[in-house]
Amino acid sequence: MKSLHFKAFGAPQAVLEFGDSHKPTPQENEVLVKVAASPVSPADYIFIHGRYRVQPVLPQIAGLEGAGVVVQADKAGKVPVGSLVSFRHRGCWAEFVSVPVEKLYILPKAFPLEKACQFALNQITAWALLEQAKVQENSWLLLTAGNSTVSRVIIQLARKRGIHVIAATRGKKDETDH
Image (cartoon, rainbow, N blue to C red; front, side, top):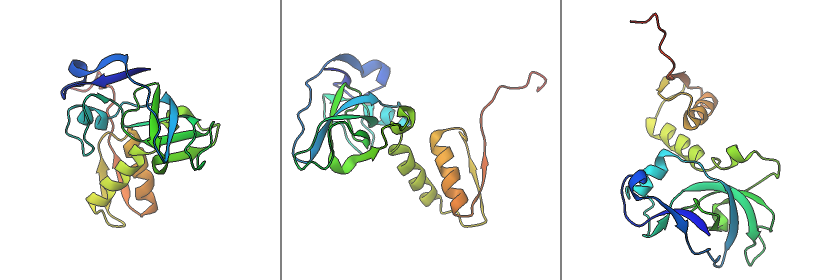
């Protein structure tokens, strides 16, 4: 199968290789997913550099999150063939990936792939960042990169907690600004 993989830690443009890898064989409580979409996120860059909390095992197929269709079910039959799933698991920048059942989110068949492939990691990141910030109800939170997916999730979570948000974004500089 084709994949983007790396054999050493470093900058993605220096260490990533496109080529053949062994098609994974699912173990007990795993399914085989045909990957349909996988985003590129800051966590992926950190992972490829070898500085993420989940450590690569070299050689390593890149990618930490994705979505696809189950092509081989787990032995217990918890996740049937044909299920559209989202997952957070390393090695998904490939045609296929084996994913533990507990890391899967089964989605409706019509769920958009561009959202499905970002379903897990961004939400967890947004929740963790808001928790670490310890912002209290009726307080203000300033977000940079206000258009990012993580910021958009933080805005929704903050709203539910009664936190006011200012979301700063980058835009084109007005030609009249000096």
